[in-house]
Image (cartoon, rainbow, N blue to C red; front, side, top):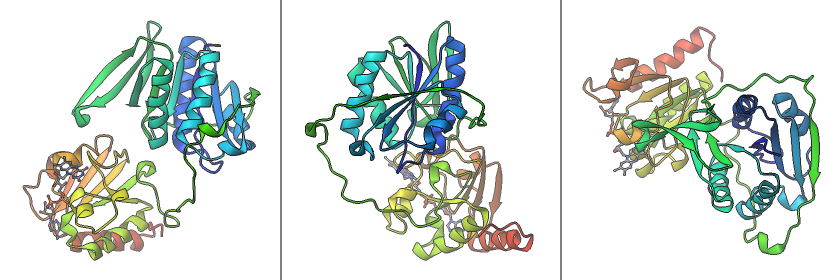
Length: 329
Ligand code: FAD
């Protein structure tokens, strides 16, 4: 059945927001193609998630349930998903552009003899063909690409599309398949999960990011930025220079060799605005730069700029948010 498929990525049973953003795209494409949306669950026991997927836009929830599949592992997930795709021949497979999603999309494309377009910012159907717009050359250009083979596999950038409103009256079908699993499909074993610090907001899901560069002067220089981030309910980001200096872990790095972010607001503190950093900011709606040097290249891309010492401006911003009762934490 040539439906539009979407992979219901989950971690410990929880489905991240990017999946629902992808569902909105899937619904739109399915309507344009005159077909339905199948949401594919691979994991341990499914409960409320099936109803949630239907309310968000799925017509069919295809459940591949097995205790051994509770945690994502590339090899078994790829095997069960590609096996099902060969049987059901979906027209399109949409996947959230997470690290796992991109890995799975590449594997699926190889297994199914088709192409994967990663990090799409726009997807539509033109004359019956799937078209995706995606950044190339570190985001300096945008390529409009048509997929000639079927299925068209596209990963969707987080926060590039709105999350649809759930409609609890929607009806859908739940189908179950029993996967045939063999030990050879599990070449890796998960020993433990290391949780991020409690309450920390993820960079690629954040609406606001406070970024710090070499201007913070040292590891302790991030403290006022953390305070501001807490007050704004924002995530913390960083340049490669400060990651390489060991001031902050790599997971905070934004840019060409770090994360690509798409918040509504990015507050760049003590960041010069090197091209490799800016390439991670293409999806940002508004950039505010705080830098002592009026010639810093960051001011060329910033909507608002403050030429001053960040150690004066950042605490003043936090204090002002608190004074107005707007601070979150
Ligand atoms: P700097 O360029 O040193 O800028 C520090 C800024 O702080 C200056 O503009 C200064 O005026 C300002 N400042 C100093 N003190 C204060 C103060 N008290 N108050 C206010 N402002 C102050 N970089 C990334 O970020 N991400 C990447 O993914 C990345 N990938 C790379 C990949 C390659 C192959 C290469 C070659 C480089 C890469 N880089 C990356 C590094 C990049 O080229 C820059 O070196 C780096 O982004 C600079 O970081 P910065 O802005 O923190 O430091």
